[in-house]
Amino acid sequence: MLLTRASEYALLSLSKIEQSDVPIGAQQLALELGLPKSFLAKILQNLAKSEILESKKGVNGGFILTKDANNISIYSIILAAEGKAPAIFDCTQYLESCPNGSIGVCAISPFLAKFQSKIDSFLYDLTLGDILK
Image 1 (cartoon, rainbow, N blue to C red):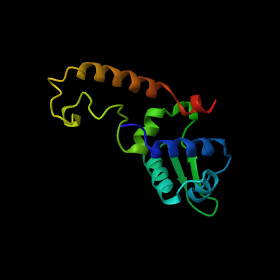
Image 2: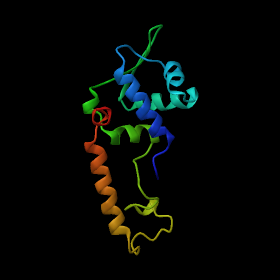
Image 3: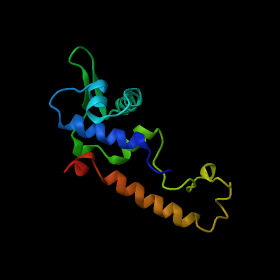
């Protein structure tokens, strides 16, 4: 799985939210970023469920980060936005993910698992703060 628009929109939204001193609503974010509001609202709700964002109610409501950008991993953002862990390939070290059901006999499976592990580590270590510098 390559990263989808959900991850891209999540990162764009989080960068705007991080730069703001006040909560920002989905409508305002959608307008400022030129994104579809309904899709963005779903992503923002997922980020709130994952405790990356906090939703403030009321007239001056909107979304704010729950913690400093340097403490929010890109891995956690992608996981929240996509609804599943980021995977570089359709097949991974997990049998249920192998399209052929042959992970035990696949010649490249060990390489793919090792490569995925390196990508996961990189995404765990990379923070929202890192990409906003």
